[in-house]
Length: 199
Length: 111
Image (cartoon, rainbow over all chains, first blue to last red):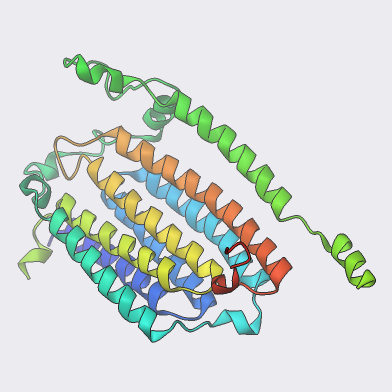
């Protein structure tokens, strides 16, 4: 019994199945719940791929942060007319044809490379000590690549530098975005009630 | 049931990512609720993230992207959080001003 493969198929079925459920469901509250299960199962796939830190961040930021935000959005706009909105069946046909074609193309591409199709032969020999830990990820964000101290190929040496600049850019970006979101979403009730009084 | 005992490769992860990506695209295209469109975007970004993590995994390929795949996946997660915050603010503003969340009725800028 190969537990890695078995768990992979379990999490893959859950993430794909609930993703399809998000598409099929017309009720926005149910869609939000299905999305939570789908993204949490994706975190399981990340753990199975050896990306423990990314899996933990997936649960903490995505499931714990982004989706809670989305659910707040659902609750704030939960008017009876908007909870369940049906899509026209002609739209469904068009989307199914287009989505099926895209999925077929992507699946063909995914299985077209021989090296990708088969797992590495010495998979059992790869211990978790060879896997990456959060400290090496943190040091890479600070500009030090402890996982790649030496590079023979001079062309690849540029890739050895860390991610300090993207990290700084994304930090400022996040700050600006949160200020902008708070500015956009602020209440304007006083202004609106004044105009309503005039009208 | 031989596929249950064989170890999985990168392709299997890519297939899961492809299914989530296509679900997200279809979700974006068909949902009339603005928040449904946002959920489609989350699915698309997540499908891309699966690919990054799979290519960065040492368990699946001996010549992997290594830490780069995981770092890019982290950046994508943070960008998705930022995008959700702004998009939700826009959606709430739209709801406050037009008393609807139907994206088909968001055509005020249409020429």
